[in-house]
Image 1 (cartoon, rainbow, N blue to C red):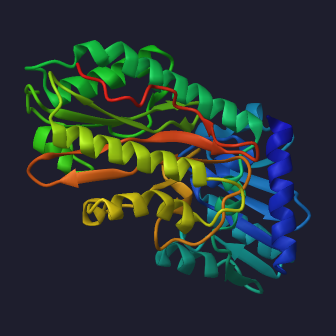
Image 2 (image 1 turned 60 degrees about the vertical axis):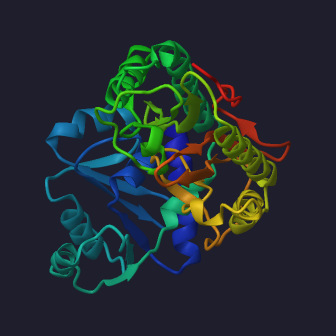
Length: 359
C-alpha cells in the first residue's frame, strides 16, 4: 500500500498549501499510521506543502518502517517531534502547522526551543477530515472485521442461557473473534442483561442471565487496524409485551436513520430521522446519546451523528447507526450496524439478523 500512503500524503500536502503553510507536523500516532502504514508507539511525520515527507521513529520501529514505506525518507530518532521541528527550522520552513489537539502544553514549549524563525500554527483536525472518506482497500478491511464479528455472534449465540454470566459471554465473544482471525477486540465488549441493559456502557460482570431478560451485546473485531462495531439485543426464554414494543421501536428508528444516511445529508438530520420516531413514542429522554459515529482506524472517529453535530456525509464514509432506548430498573434495547454511505444506497457491513431472537 506504499502508493496509497504516498497519495494520502499528497492530498495532505495540497491541504497544507491551500491553508498557506509550508509544512505540517503530524504527531497523532493514528494519523501517522494512516499516512505511512507504520503502527508504533513513537513516531512523527513532517509533510511539506509539495507532499514530500520525512518520517521519524526510534530504533524499535526503524526496520518495520523501512519495510512498509521503503520510498519514505526515515530518520531514526527518539525525540521524534523535537527533531523534526528542528530540521524544519534548519531547512527554512517558515510556517509550520501542528496538531494542537495532540500536542500538550509541555510539548509545545519544547518545540518552541528548536523552532527559531518558525511560526507554529494549529492545524486543526485536517488529517482526520481526510480520513473520513475511505478508499476501497480500507472498506475491505472494515468488511472483514465485520464478517468476523458476525461469525463470532453466530458461534456464541447458543451459549446465552439462564445461569450464564455477562462476563462469560463477553469473554466468549472476544475469544471467538481472535480465533476467527481478529487482531484483538476492537474495544472492551459490553454485555448488559436485565436491568443492566438500561446502562448504555455497562461493564459486564457476574450477573447471571434470568428468564425474561433482554441481553444487549456491543462488540466488534479489530482487523488490520480497522474496527468493527455491532450491537444486538436478544431475549432469554420469552419476550414481554413491553420488551417487544421497545425493540420494534428501536428497530424502526435504526432503519429510518440508515435510510437517511446518504451522501450530502446533514449529520444532525440523519440523527433526527431516528430520534424523531423515539421522541414521538414518548421515549425521547430514554435515548441519551447520538445515533452514531464514523469508524475506521479508530472505533470513534469523524463524523459524529447527533442532534447537536454539524457536517455532511459523503460517499464512502463508514458510520454506525445505533439508536437505543434505556428504561431504568427494567432494561434496554440497542441495535447497531456498521455501514458505508454510498451513492447507490447504504452498504451494511454487519449482516447479523436484526429480528428479535429468543434464546
